[in-house]
Image 1 (cartoon, rainbow, N blue to C red):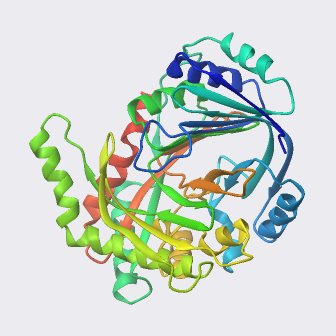
Image 2 (tube, rainbow, N blue to C red):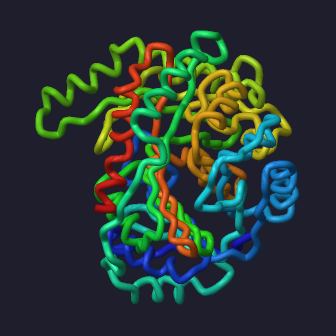
Length: 427
């Protein structure tokens, strides 16, 4: 555990944040969690950075949760890391055989050497070392992030449009037959032999698309560049909350009137609301496995929130945790998150494996932290780019919830809409 903490005043939050990013890049492992000035998500901080690894654990589906529990029992304090989507193969009897060009492990957590927690006016540094030396080293870094690599990247769809539309029709038939009610289907966009500067790409992405669960995550040669709007699950004291997103409409920043119509469309559209309700029911069921009877409740249903590219429908479900439940039990009971699978979970995950052509890996998994008090917060890894610097493979995925009433053409357009910020960053 990092025993020492020291707090320093900040004169310029924006400048310091960039200097801190430049400084973090010297480490083989770091995790930046960035709230981007959103306040409706009840953040505990504006920005949290874990840099350097004292100890770490990597695991693949099979005994990953048990291994993580042992690791946590021996290392109670700050812990940062990720949960890959393919941990589904441990929570259910499933498999993953699709192509994976990135290669994140199913699970990775690390005990950081240094943690920096930023508010708008101050930074608290948790370290066993000298906090003053750390802040001085950060303040010597440049306060700009410059492009160090060629810009143009040619991105290709893994699935052709006509194939995508054909798959949506097949999924609608599965729903008609009663195999499932709703399924989250995604496609991959990728570039082989791509050279990018992950720091610059992250900086550009969050300028274009700032979101409350943004993250920049580095494990040696692999990077996740994340502009997620979605929380998976948060624990504070004996309360947990989950905030699934289901329902999307486009922003129109040129016309306030049209933008408001697009926002109202979400609140009034029965298809969007039925998708949201299905996921809310699934999350309620998941939380009830680890919460005291009668405490699981929907705090907000069909809340519509505006982000730079899209309006989103977000519901909030909470519950009071049963006694003697570890944070790992909570993850195991609720993972993968329902907004990225559909319902019922096992059936749709089998169909996802059958019809998607890329292994999800860290996409639709989660990145987050556990603090020394045992509280935690994890995002949903969407609107994210993944980069493997050793094989120069760049990848991102996008999709949406498919119901029987889905229009295949519109679903295809929605997946492109969700990819647009990432496409722009790479232009």
